[in-house]
Every structure is written in structure tokens, then in C-alpha cells.
Length: 222
Image 1 (cartoon, helix red, strand yellow):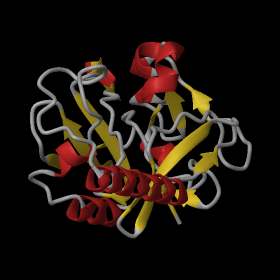
Image 2: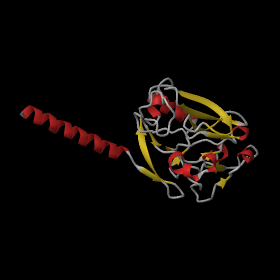
Image 3: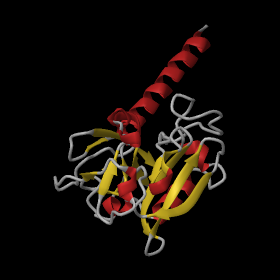
Image 4: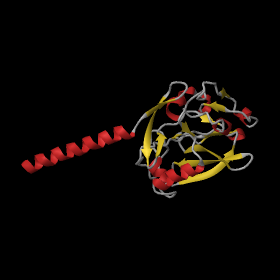
């Protein structure tokens, strides 16, 4: 009987320690609009655990809202939109930004930045490598992801979401299917690198896309 009580007390103490460690490892960050984001420690990095949704740069200047997908291909200046031009997508999926917004260096809150592809590589390596990192980074369940959401266990609290994309003639696509995350790394004069999470694989996909395309952004602490 005493042994059972001791085990219960021990389990309670362990749970309490874990809760305190999680509290120490988590913090909030505010963007220029006043939106507040949770963050999470993953290895030596600290990541936002939500997609960025600011409509202003960290110096307070507004980012251009461009609602027409046909207009995006002509842009060479920073812009954002909501998926399918519906602001109801803001709170869960955040905004879609073109790479020119990323390249401003002012998109994330002060003290944070859009990751280079090498920083995304570090994240992937720490969470198990390219073959399983997608599952470790994806939100659990089918609330936002399409079935089967292969391998998803959100082991590190990154809570990756399928925000979809905006690419000129293709328009909006892949919400619930894919999460595209810009990096700050240039691939060519017209393209930049990204990391993608998919609903039907446990791995991650790296690629490049036209700089005028709209994708999600996750910020990492400086």
C-alpha cells in the first residue's frame, strides 16, 4: 500500500517537474500588430509554434495586401494575403507572404528572423532527419490536416500546419494538404528555397519557388 502511494507521489512530482520545464522553455512573442505567438525550444533553436500573421513590418510600416492572385506574378515588392482572400483563415493558418516580404529583413518581430535554409536543415536534423522530421513537426490529428496525416506526432511542439500556397495562374491551393514555409535563402535570380510538410508522408520536402509566390512563414529567434 505504501509502495503504491510512493509511486503516485513520484509520478506527480515528475509531472510537476515536466510542467515547470515546459514553462521555462516556452515564451511568447508579439508582432507589430499586437498578435501574440507561442514559441518552443527545439535543440539549440527557438521557433514560433504558430504561422506568422502580421500585416506590418517590425518598424510599424504596413505590408501591402494584394487580394488578386493574378496580380502577384507582377510583384517585386513585399505583399501578403489570406488564403482565398478570406480573413477567417488568419487565426489558424496565418498569412501567405511573397519572398520580397521575407527579404525585407523586417517581417518577423525584432529579435526574430525568417530562417535560412541551413537553419531549417538544423531543425530537420534535430527532429530525426528528412525521412521522419515532417511527422515530428506536423500538428497531430485531422482537424486541419487531410487524412492520413502520415507520421504526425508533433513531438517537439512545432505544430506545423497546412497553410497552402498562392502561385499566379495556379491560384490558391493545397490547404489541408501541404504546409509551405519560406526560407530567406536565394536559389536563383527568380526563385528562393522553401521547406514543405505533406499530409501523406512522414518526411519533409525541400524545394524552390518563384519569389512572387505566397507561402507561410515561421520565425526563429536570433
